[in-house]
Image 1 (cartoon, one colour):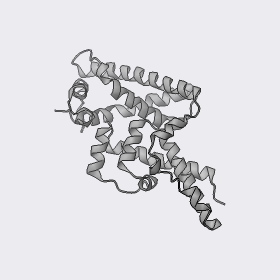
Image 2 (cartoon, rainbow, N blue to C red):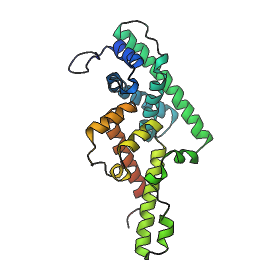
Image 3 (cartoon, rainbow, N blue to C red):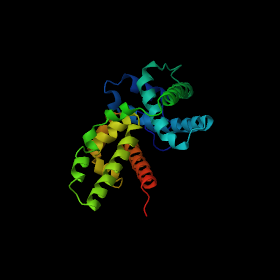
Length: 232
């Protein structure tokens, strides 16, 4: 039984990590959701320190935190608890998480330095979800106003597409699996709770985390669109 994180009850870190490592359900087990709640704020905090030391813009914190979480999840079987004492395990695990995350962020930084833009990343997202190949052909037969409107919509879809491509693949897949383009563009839309929870667990997230990242994605895409296509 996973220790609840309610009230003043202290979580048993040794038990939570052991369940994550051994539960045959994998990322669908309840312990994964609890570990996310226990750990993600810490990962965001050390990501914020990392970007400041690197001189990287604070906007990168969310993406780095998600990448760090993904790396921790993929490597968690390699963590060995020093004892059964919850506090000792917490300290050792957070030290291990910090090392794991910083190594991943250093790798990302090196790759971004070598490849400022990787066009292959965009190919990993289903093209028909966001960009229509029919746009260019159809504009020839439209009046100027309609053609302009089509070009603006195509640009908006391209921006959304590119912003999605910057996200860690598991997070990106979770968002794509729960939402279509229209609902991602409308962060106030209601999600299908049961289905969303199952998909979130499948990728190692919580429904709240998916909703938060989805809203931030929409905000980034909207702000970028407004900067590139300012209103007169």
